[in-house]
Length: 310
Image (cartoon, rainbow, N blue to C red):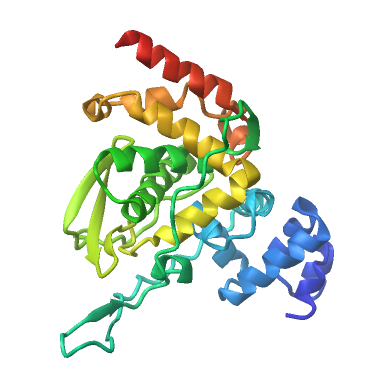
């Protein structure tokens, strides 16, 4: 591992039997970022080319390495598949454990997942909007924009903030996975569970999201049956939008609330609106993971148009 973390070239990888993805990573990212990505992958037990080629966009985002590194990892996965590396299929996820908590004699059960400390303490709250709301443009890829939009649509369904964060992240992730499969960048996961346990199903961005009751409220379940934490979705948006998180959040909220909730029940209505303000990138594989500007001026213009239609 010490040799691998030196990030050798592809030729050096062959001579010392190291995986070729390290050489790809060294070319895709600056040295410091590449080392951070390599360390994160090793910590997850991802060592071989086949294991790295099997990374999905959700798993890359869960590493929380930042937008630039995520784009580099997606490029590495694409190059591995282009060279004919067959992705290694992950083992089916184990069911979540439940453990007893100290209570007052009641049979309290705590969710033994990866709920963040901020969520456990009730610290998650919508970001404060700037006053006045500034008309800015933010350089970002499409993924966090879709997550933010999906969360606002979930709030219209009368989910609370944490429930909406979880549901929005899963809905946006399903769209990203479908897009990656369509472009040939990602492969459809095999051996997915066919009967996910759930207590409610919500429709967001024209996809159905199963939700399961936990002690913290409803949480969305991804296609592998794993409960998605609210804190992960919040930190993902906060990291990508940076200092403009509050402004983007406020503008998208104004747009979502400019329409009655029944409007978004119309097939493709939410996606058609999203396509009018999402960052404009190149079509096809070239635009995958690329960054472009989202203009809050365009979002607010759509808010005005919605008011004029009423």
